[in-house]
Length: 158
Length: 158
DNA sequence: GAAGTCGGAGATCATTATAGTCTCCGATCG
DNA sequence: CGATCGGAGACTATAATGATCTCCGACTTC
Image 1 (spheres, chains in turn red, blue, brown, green):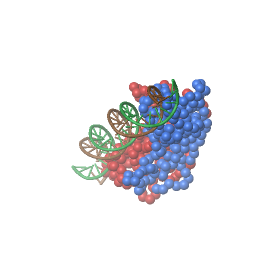
Image 2: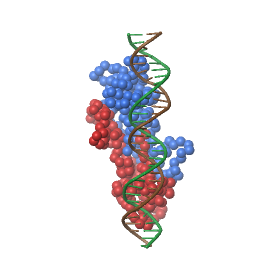
Image 3: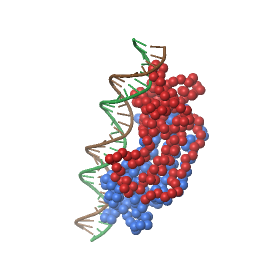
Image 4: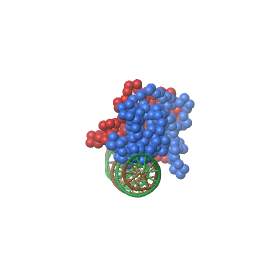
């Protein structure tokens, strides 16, 4: 349950790899192309390409065309959170459908729904969690983070 | 992304309703059957039945057969967490496949996987979150809960 | 003890989301 | 100019989900 999609996994791996090559102290900083990442992690090339394109559109990475082209982080690894990556690839966080349903497909349970409000709090907490962990955290520099207050003191509509 | 299944939603609603009827101060405590819940929330009867059966097997609710039969909470609403409900209905929490993959379907990325360990921490944090909110919290009595330490001080393998 | 009411369990089908593939285009650098 | 790269779209296959249907067995009520 609550599984990330493969695309999201691939995206995180790729970003992590790009960051490592770009800022790592082992090799000199260089640009990385899709093929290299795909081979490194055994990811289907075309699928990874799509993921990277999506991330580029979201402004998390910069693309460079032509021979010797590839991708670079668009900002510091410290400023890229897991939430941003997931949101870019999988769309907005929605633990339950009804948080962003379109017109014409109303929630049949909305009327007497008693779980909408409390679940919204859970969702917010999860979002905080995902938004507090950065690419840099995933690479070893691991600060301590605290998320608080899942349920608030004010009552819940019922 | 990270969406609960409809079954999980239905399960939470049903439990919430059962708890309200069982412990609510409006009506006298009584047993609730599947049909009543299904009509109350516009949930397909058979589907809800399956969900309730699952919850009963997990020991969260007790079933009573015969006319005037139905379901009762097997324990206090304070002792039923969202995590338990989700786990009962959707199976064990697994943000990524590789945390419980079977023999014969190895993860192609396992070898150089750099996100496995950090994501495991995220998963644990989410679990704590879900396991700290109870049915009772969802019904209005809302204590304050704190989840801490997503990333730990020790380094991450890379 | 018979009838009716309930849960238990299985197979089945439709719909959707996901994962993955294929093809063509345009930009860029050598 | 042309090889190498990303950009973008359509397309297919597979799996998960949501939902429905049918039959069985247990128990409670009358």
